[in-house]
Image (cartoon, rainbow, N blue to C red):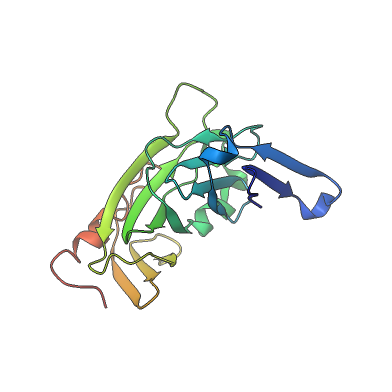
Length: 197
């Protein structure tokens, strides 16, 4: 939960008696939490504010770090659910990555990003962040989701994005690379001249 006081409250249901409170290092008068997003594995949390500042908290951290490259009000996030839930067999450095995910913003833009909770404090968290598409109506993207297929070796993606007035569908080939980002540019570039259905 995100509180008006600028505090994130985490309650792990298996240990509901242990409530963790983590303060965002900003004065409550300077920050109004808009939304809090947690990935399906429960390891990555992104907090967005009305002011367009965004903060990232990894499961093992005691305080969040500001995402300086994310100057936007985030309305929705499409996590890479399949990759995040299959990380149990991966190396710790791979588990610390969000893998590629999509961000829907208040001004109708879609961004692709990869964050890495590397222990090196001086390394930027944003391993990759890029604007991949702008809706013509510029309404807030209230929901976004993607599925990769075929599941065994994904070559295509289906992306659904919603606004208060429409539902958009994007389908197409994706780049096979993962972890580095730039996986969805190819798909969205095919919609530069032709509007999505």
